[in-house]
Amino acid sequence: MADLKLSYEAVEIPEECNVIVGQSHFIKTVEDIFEALVTSSPSLKFGVAFCEASIEKLVRRDGNDKDLTECAVRNALKIAAGHTFVVVIKNGYPINVLGRIKAVQEVCGIFAATANPLQVIVAETEQGRGIIGVIDGGSPIGVEDDAGEQWRKNLLRNVIGYKR
Image (cartoon, one colour):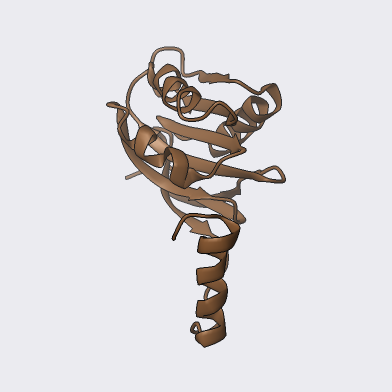
């Protein structure tokens, strides 16, 4: 049996952006995720990168914002795991687009959707690299109290407008 190397890659997330990291299985992923995102909101800006695992083994890319597309490509190249995709979004939140991305036929799953500091844990063998998990943000330091509950409810109802 060959050696197994574990490492992690810090994901670049630009200011006021979120990132979605997932796995898919087909070369048309980048085009299908583009279509899912571009039709979700006229104000959404995004970039998509997909690590092709066979044929030419290229990072395929698309998006409606050059800087976000370049950021998605940089992240995909750092992670360098076959059939992995990275989406960087601005002017929207993952909650607004995750359902559409998950509905893309070739998407197998989502590892993370966040604006928090994100590390992708990567396993490497002689065949290649694959994601085995993520570290999303920090560890809990306590339990929400009544003031924290009020803050959360205010955020959802009055600041973001997701609850009535």
